Image 1 (tube, rainbow, N blue to C red):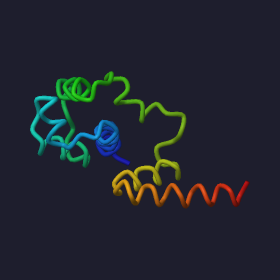
Image 2: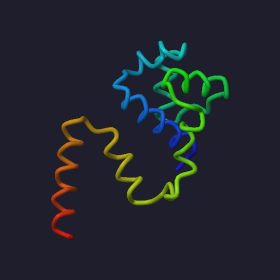
Image 3: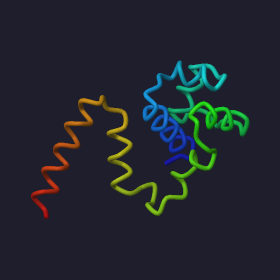
Image 4: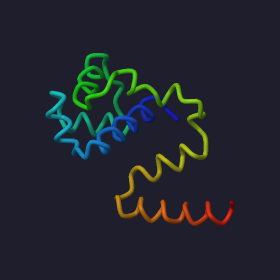
Length: 109
C-alpha cells in the first residue's frame, strides 16, 4: 500500500474519531476541505507544514499521525485490510460488522 494512502487513512480515522467533517477539520487546520479529501484518499504527498497543521487541527502529536507506520502489525496484514475497508462504512454498517465478528468470536472460542 502506498505511504500516502496509509497516511490518509490514518488522518481520516482521527478525523472520524473526533466526529468532524472534512470541512470542519479544514477550518481547524487552516487548509482547504478539498485538500483534506485529497490527503485522506492518498492523492497528495503533503508538506511538513501541512502535517503540522493537521496534527494541531486533530489535537494530536505529529508522532501519533505516523503510528500506523511503526505498529507491530505489518501494513498488509488481514486485520488492517479489514479495518481500512470497514473505516469507510457508515456507523450502522460498522455496528453490523462488529456484531458478526463478535458472534464468530464466540463460535471459535
